[in-house]
Length: 328
Image 1 (cartoon, rainbow, N blue to C red):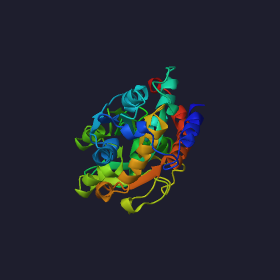
Image 2 (cartoon, one colour):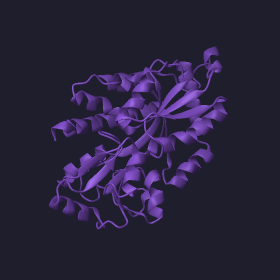
Image 3 (cartoon, rainbow, N blue to C red):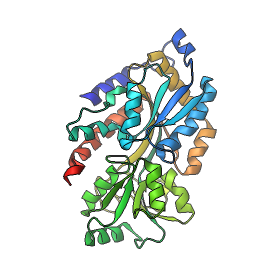
Image 4 (cartoon, helix red, strand yellow):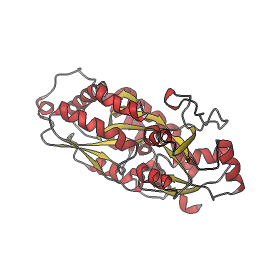
């Protein structure tokens, strides 16, 4: 299967420092590097990408340009990088949704725009639990309040997401099944527009990464009811997990990680890994994430590849259980 080939290919890549850097790797990059974000500005992927791009510029000696290629819940940007020349000059800062979007396409009998093994993992950057937010003027003071109201008014409480089968759609689908309630899904082109719509009262509730929604909670505009993490975290102190509230197996992380197209030369991959190790140990980078309430969650390639494989095995059945949205 594609995911198994992805893991085998990633683990077969050489370890940092295990071979001399070739002339080709020394020459790379020969031009500016494009770091694709498959969503509009303002979301988790964009938050992850911009500090990384700035730090990589200093290390690589070439401009690293963030290119927001939004559309289809991340499919457009992901597929663009999958098709790019595998020479290390086009990279992807992906969100967790990239692992199951091909399975979502298969639900509609379409050939996926890419497969998971179309990419080589480089490093994980962030790994935040999704957070359920309501506006400060909303009537719901707890998840129990929200669920009770949703059961009385099926399909009338609306929530914004980053797109169909996207990184903030899937956790809501998991929650609705566990809570036995029905919400109204309103998809947008990314987490940024989904947050804007929520803050502008176009929808009732939203799911966002902590670093994106925390500033609005601190300003008193938003109330955070729960998060999708597997356990309590210091960054979300006092906010219960869905599991703590009794919703078993409702666990979801909006992680962000760096990938290169399959076929990128091994020496270039090794140099990228080494560069990312330096980036993620740079306090100027990690402090940006800390201040946003989204602490760095660095993983190098072998650990990250295994993490992605495990997350794909866990979440692919969820996508299949959601099924085709046009049949609902």
